[in-house]
Length: 316
Image 1 (tube, rainbow, N blue to C red):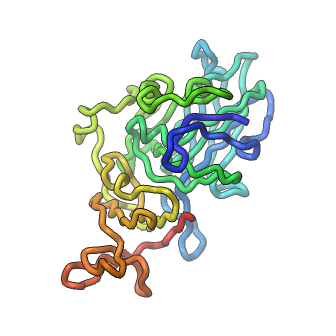
Image 2 (cartoon, one colour):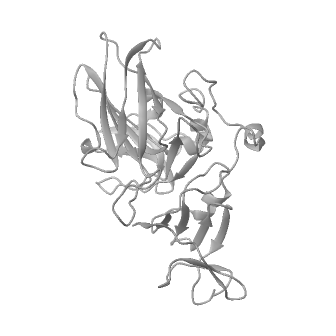
Image 3 (cartoon, helix red, strand yellow):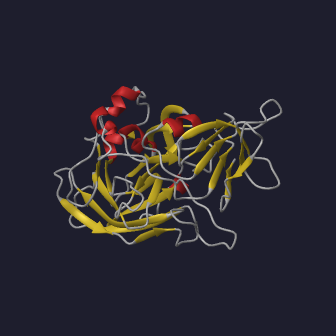
């Protein structure tokens, strides 16, 4: 069973991936499973914009950072499981794959987890909250392990054409440095953050300048990162341990409107405004989730402003 450092249901710890979360071992090749954190369908059963996504190219390297394999052409959702897709990358020679780069296509993808079965049988895992830590665009994740260990807190966005103003087109992962070994002490968050830009990297395009870590100066620069207008008209309602205020407060979060029922907060992702849910004690200046006419803002004068989501997706 492979392990990786990550945030599990709000707590920094070691994420354990069960055997059924890994792709089959097809040799001589590195095998990858990409799992998305955000998905959904419209009323006609058609996939929604940015519900899944595309990995156009995968490149894998040995310890000398020599290219030993490349492949691609994965659209998550094409297979039997709508939340993940598997792909193998043929390798040359007998070198062990240490570093892998994932390049998005023009269909943006929010990656919650990547697991791999390497050519020699080694298994590794990575979780999407690394993008949140390192300063990439992110969104809460609804990806739950089947053994009910917990929920990956965030997924990381990558997008080749940047049509939604998502900044990274590719990410690179050093598997052994971001993974955990049995009995290893969980490092502090500050220790893990030092791996941003070194053991995990990101690029705006193939051959572009490495982007990580995103420092405070970059955060303030609208030419580097700025909030995008909401173009995903779903509403995500989470009954899990998600924090909608954190989503709204983040300069790099991107995705559909978001509700945390546990917190009692609605995040308008177009304005990044955190608004309390309506209840028996709060009936104005709130977001009414439980209405026969659809979710709506209730103003101070009692006027209702419907949000009219194309779909309400519930995570429970």
